[in-house]
Image 1 (cartoon, helix red, strand yellow):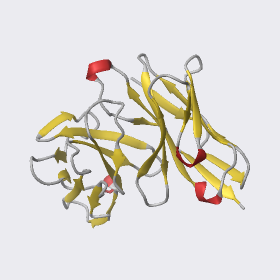
Image 2: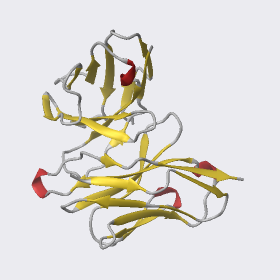
Image 3: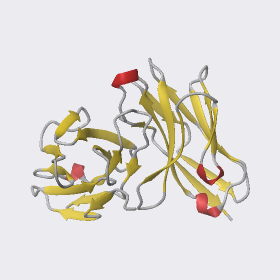
Image 4: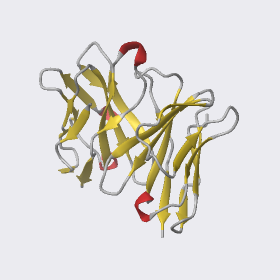
Length: 115
Length: 117
């Protein structure tokens, strides 16, 4: 019974490079959320996706960040031209349906370090 | 917009002592309430949730929380803690907006619980 998988677990990038973070939801879940945990801050919502659709990206920076959840394959959070301020833990969560009462299952996170 | 305040950033306690982690929220509409635990270098695990009904909610690992609507609080309690409870705890809310509700969690800043032998 695989839970939410995220890879890589740790990612090191130099300033200006691209970072690609992958999230495979629980089997059968079609709703994915991305959250970011910055040092000394709590977790902040970034984006909510259903299969092939972005539903809410209100928490995602307007530039350099993008997310997708294709029909086949994992959800991808992409950060272009990374800067030191992007260093954080990025968590993905999935749920079976969209209702707020549904439990979200979290992955172990990807810890991004920008040198 | 909703917000969540966890009043204590760090709570040290001795093993077998009781503990309470405080959480207050602010929202113009009703909310669902959650407590998550995060062990070092791991993801979040749901401890318990309040959706409706009884205001006293029991969760995993012996934790419970009480929803107090008048005080807009959802404090987490455990009568006797173990060393293994050392972790960071997050209170979170989701707007209960009926058919348009979805799982966009708003988190508090977190409380680091440290249990000493």
